Image (tube, rainbow, N blue to C red; front, side, top):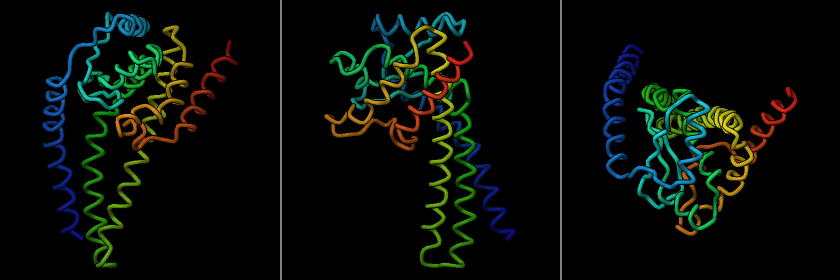
Length: 229
């Protein structure tokens, strides 16, 4: 038992030391592979979002990859992918719908999800080690696989909770800025088809709640806010 505790503690400490360095390196890589967003219509919408937050501007960069995605780094930088911007130019999505991605990623930043994930990753590794050592003694053949399965479920659950929180933040921000949460809902309805012609599903659908559940949660929020008028 002491051995398991010491191994787990070492895993948490090592993760706490390494993860920030890895995160910083990944951030630098993203910046080197991206350009500053210059699309006028989309910039005008991000300026409206910035104004609602009492900010001068919200810097957004375009990650030069073909997939449809948006992301936020632990340092608070917001990215749209080139694939997402291409879908805008091709008429598959509107500028308002892309602005809802930016609002969503701002939610991850404001709520501290990216930084919290770095801590969670260390804790999950420690849990995986504890379960693997314990279960391998009880079920030698498959103990490690069960441990990996349990920690994967935990990771997915935490990720889904973050998405609901970021969706709620984005909906409030879009309403406040006058863009409206309807753009957020319409984009979610399109997500399963976006990127299909490039042979991949949108990364927004990975480790995320079911699209219908996300839409329902946003609609409930809009209804709740409307009832207060």
